[in-house]
Image 1 (tube, rainbow, N blue to C red):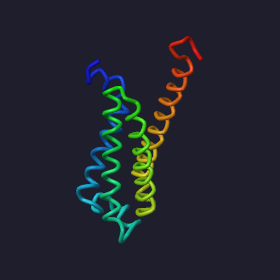
Image 2: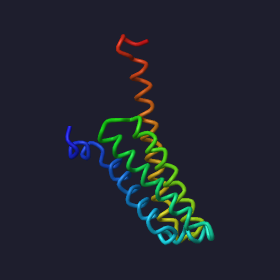
Image 3: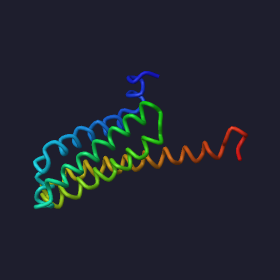
Length: 139
């Protein structure tokens, strides 16, 4: 299966991971200027936190993409967990820092975290089913 076929088979997962990589790289590169909400809510620690958060979010998105396209769930799942944390953290800081003005971005980030959590649950459930129906006929 080629990468365009995989993209067509999982467009949401791919674009959520691409968004994590893009947003994460921005945070890692420019720090607290990436989000006024993060700057407002974290104040004096915003710059270092934004760099660390960005690096982690970008790493999570990259792991998700690599795991998805290489069919390696042992990398995709940790990537999804890191994305859940990164999107949740962003959602909380943007709403805390901007109040009602951060609701739109906060809701979108929370929805991405929720989608990642649902995907993680689905992969893990499928793995348990496959393991339960092993090659020996189900042991």
